[in-house]
Image 1 (cartoon, helix red, strand yellow):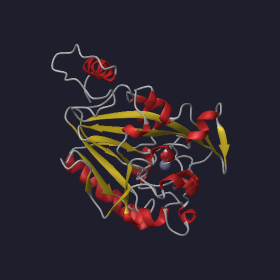
Image 2: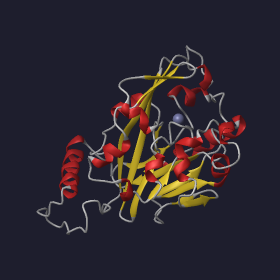
Image 3: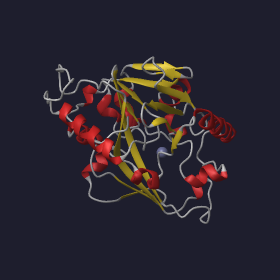
Image 4: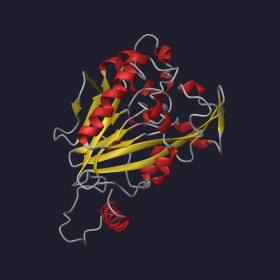
Length: 292
Ligand SMILES: [Zn+2]
């Protein structure tokens, strides 16, 4: 990650661009405030929190970790050739409710501001997003999906068959949340997919948590490669203990995927972002700041 000063400066330049400022040397006029950036940028958004009474369902005992609160992030990858939304966070309707909302089975959720509102603060409309991809279709990853039905969805074939097949609830999906995507543009993937064709933003299959779970590798010029690992691990302890949640679709596939990405992380020298790690999330700079 770049130092706080360079990040702050970069953030100021970015804000100036969003505001249509043309006084910066070398900055060309843009057709619209929402034009894609010249360099690759990763922006992080707060798409909610989940509070748990127990970590039992995650294959952990109460003494394995004292973490009981999870972050729910969304990310925008702003590439010269277009904009990708990665993850859709908690259901947008939660933003209309004050504080924590208790869900089934000892789980509470909160969302302080919808993703669409957070994007609007940057001058972006949902139509300014060209591609959407979710690690998987559980409700805490597709909560804002309906707003992006104009974008092209990048989905692994096994996930598409589960999410849009006869019985999505069998996989603990809530099809009402992404009903707007049923007839929306889709690119169904059979494995690795280089989103912009330059090797900098790559979707990789990581099955196990769900049939077509995927992760995203973002190769940033200054920050270096970052693996946005979806729900391959929920907690630091999940990684340390190779703990598999009870609700995973395929336990053996999950373990094989975990092992494969441990090797790849090492090979790439990549930074792992366990998306639900609140400790990690609280250390990140949220949009309008960005990583590049
Ligand atoms: Zn999740």
